[in-house]
Length: 381
Ligand code: CAA
Image (cartoon, rainbow, N blue to C red; front, side):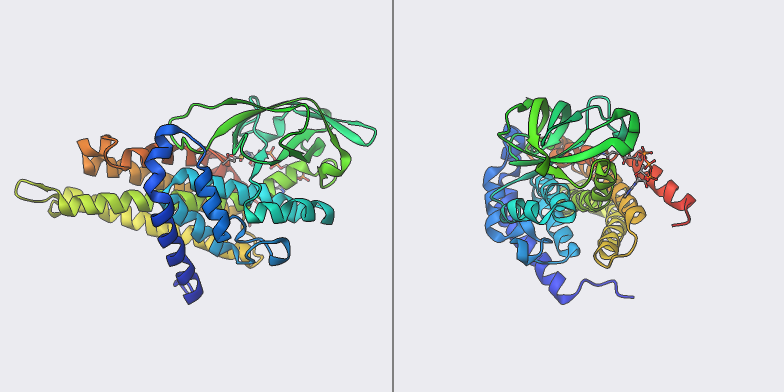
């Protein structure tokens, strides 16, 4: 049993850290204030080859393993959580659908552009009446000759308006429940497809999140991903991997908050000494450090299992809920350690706390993760 990252992974981790601290972190507060999509960051990630880390070289990616990708999400999220999720959504549920389920033609058409960062990907599952119950989606896809005609509305779509290609889930027959759900690749400028309202959120502001509207949106059958009725399983299997990425995002956010809290506690003097000298503060730091370490082990273990073809759905859900609950707890405690300064925008911890909250909600709420885990336990997995 080996608990250390390999030399190669440690080298990549340092490279991601150096890059993210130098190129991404300095603008995180600005992007939070302006709620502007961080296009400059995405260009930088693309230039480094980070938009296609786990994508095979034959499709224009870096051909690295899943853990390397997870290390990148962690370090980018530590610098800017919005940029972290843009990268995670783009890769896990924006590019992998095509790589894993696309025809050779679809892969050639989209994957190299996604892997290079020329295109950003997006994943459109959620609807006003279908959040945790993804199977309740109502967007319809009606076959008409060689085309499908899509009608419906998606909400809370990360990268909405900035992605060039969207994996969209619609039903060809509502009566068939999950067995009617089918996946389609929809390009940004397809007639009948428009980007609707931009969500105003508590945090993660630069992760632009929008509504998507399909009004008699006609797409050729060649844009269907997989077979009719395979969409739900495609979505679920993608989310297994995606959730490890969100766990890594939570880890990055928690680490950033811990770093700030530790620095502050050792520097800030009250009653004639650094506040770290008080156990009330030092024990908070001890709890944070321990929970971050536990979260890291869960996230890396899930990534390792995925990379090595071992069952990983249960571990992905464990990693996601534990790491993101840790992010919420650690960021909240970091605000407390910094006191009034923690609540002030002068320091980053209030942003980290606002950013952490959504990680407990998206890619399946942390209650849904417990449902997935309990179902796996029931099956003896
Ligand atoms: N892989 C492959 N197939 C799977 C699967 C998986 N992980 N999980 C379930 N399935 C299959 C089942 O085997 C079953 O197939 P059969 O009918 O052939 O047996 C079928 O899918 C239906 O499974 P369930 O009966 O378990 O489905 P359910 O309706 O009870 O739903 C759920 C299960 C886990 C609650 C699911 O609805 C879910 O994950 N909900 C949360 C939705 C979610 O995560 N949304 C995230 C949106 S994307 C996002 O957030 C991105 C972002 O912005 C950051």
